[in-house]
Length: 103
Image (tube, rainbow, N blue to C red):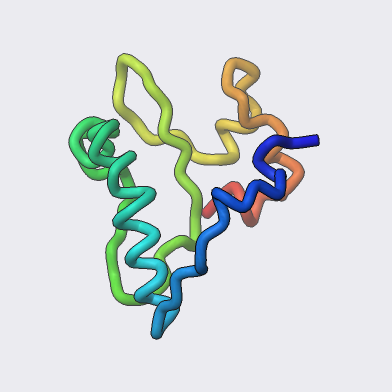
């Protein structure tokens, strides 16, 4: 079937034990995600600026969505305008209704 599902005993190792979930997540981030972020210069070159409407705070701040797109001009387009533009790939988001699109 799949080679990575094999029963090769050479690949088996004892599971790592962490005292807390956050300790395990920090280790996972440092060993798996951070090297990718550094390799692709994620923090340096993704936007080179804060995105419109960005809010950082102690409470959850993901009450809306933002679609970041490449273009010659900078601007903000409301969600309900994006779903009716046939040149943009967001038409299927219309199924979520105006309450979602107006966030």
